[in-house]
Image 1 (spheres, one colour):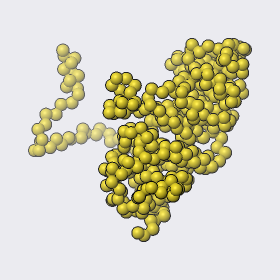
Image 2 (spheres, helix red, strand yellow):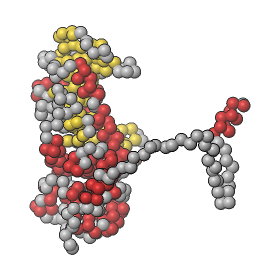
Image 3 (cartoon, one colour):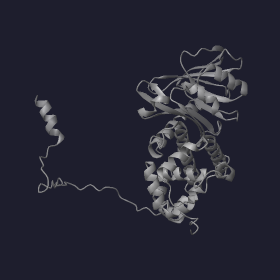
Image 4 (cartoon, one colour):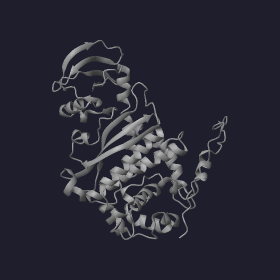
Length: 406
């Protein structure tokens, strides 16, 4: 085979994958055709090309000669793809995501974060993914419903860039608080979490490790008041220094009302933050909700290639790796574009040189005066095609008037 064109978009995209144990000969000595790294590349391309089944991936590989050269094989059967996805070590994929996070931080440099006084924040949350009923034998959450959770740690470096740094998947019956310590670190960052993580034992551990956190708690969360402060923000109705009783370290307790009058109760061990900074930082937790929505819509985590536990975990990690690679690629080539705009355009240029993709992004847009109104315009005649269809035109006003007449 001729060597693949190094400047093709998909080749540049996959070149951002770190070289790690997935491509180690020792780890792949029993593999006859595909290395683990090639398997990861195949399922990343399935996400980008929107191949929705293993058979569709099989056909997609056969139709893309340049991609065949990338993975080192001419064809792969759907059964082999299923077997290899289920055989992969999930820990290696978690390590790959971590290496991409290191590359992301190197690209971002000294990003100030959403607020320079707060710095980059790390948001932790989980999302539920419903599974087909044939997974009821191990992921049941009720007698006729089953699913899994993805517990994700995401860094928000700026208002235009977020990145999934860590993930621990679980069955749907695992509480958020039981998963949090798998993805939280004593790294000096401020961790922002919702009520599912407000567990006193966990919070006590974070205080002992000097992990900074900002957590929403329930109204019934018991604390001991150490000092009452006068609120200075119009939405704040309570500002106190308290202890969580199980630990002696002082923490900040803030109660505020949103625009709809709903009360929120927050606890943080960062005593330097102002009321406004605390409120704004908690509101930024919404970035992870937008991330989950984007992930499910555009990276297709809901369409499963396997129903075995390991196969599902591996697919979830590959979905996050796809997002991570896309964000790194965007920061390198088009940091002013949104990740959705970048990915949507990139998907159309995967098998052409990168310069073609950049030409599309940099093309000059024609200025438009907007839709011009025509004075006293006559109603546009509608052609119903009566020669080829049976048509009885009725608009909605017919039913509105009919209801009024009753």
